[in-house]
Image 1 (cartoon, rainbow, N blue to C red):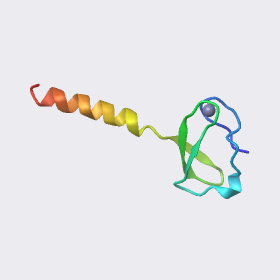
Image 2: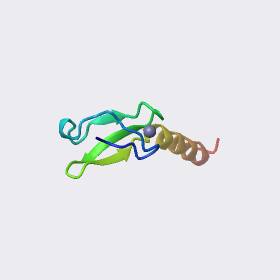
Image 3: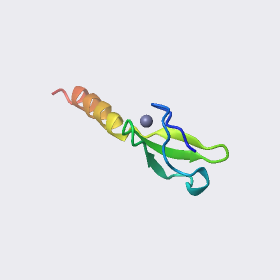
Image 4: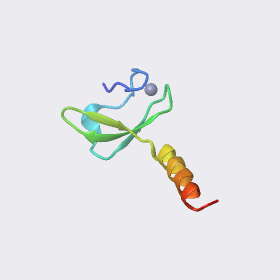
Length: 65
Ligand SMILES: [Zn+2]
């Protein structure tokens, strides 16, 4: 059983069935996590959208806009 780092609910995936680099989604809070390690299973939040927003903001500041 894999527990969501965000809301601590059951992610409904079998630990032995996920591999490194796989993305698992939490049905409870909707967060996505990438499997960054197995044994022990380690999940990293997928925050691509947030990073893009920050980059865009920095670019517009640099561009004298
Ligand atoms: Zn969750």
